[in-house]
Image (tube, rainbow, N blue to C red; front, side):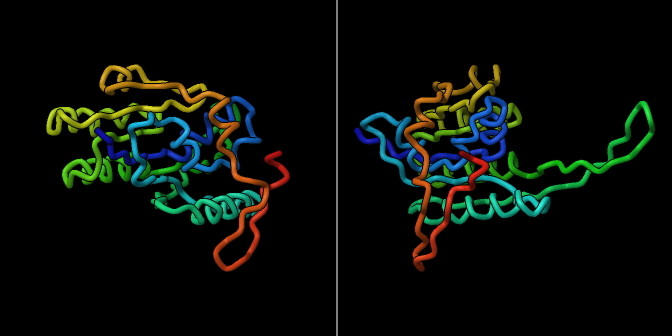
Length: 204
């Protein structure tokens, strides 16, 4: 039988996994291609839900992220869900200087809400969760208890893992370099209005 699949991608968990490996060339990642390259032949991808927050500085990073999000918006069957950044005060223990460090908020809550809603509405047979955030163990556990026929597959980004998610998930995989290499956008992506988005040269 065919399986309906919805993918839930923790954008920052994936980004920092790639960053930890120095894999900038894969930042220009086609999320739909990545998921499709990980599915089995009997699985049909219904939708990708991509979770992130917009950065507000510095300007060059804002531009790169904006271009990438616009490239993602050219994909069919992909929706973007936004959290927010919260500025947290951090004091240096040695010198007492205070700086404000941005902390991304709400992604885990947004993922939990969406995956539980979709399970309740019977939108998927299998959920494909791309994250190693152990905070997501709560909704995974709830789906196992309330909807035992549904499966949750966890895809761990590079250098990321969660023991509790490996124990709760129906199965898990470590997303490897070969998958990313097969899943990048072309250097130029055309928007529906004809505008051309170009891969940032810093990501080469």
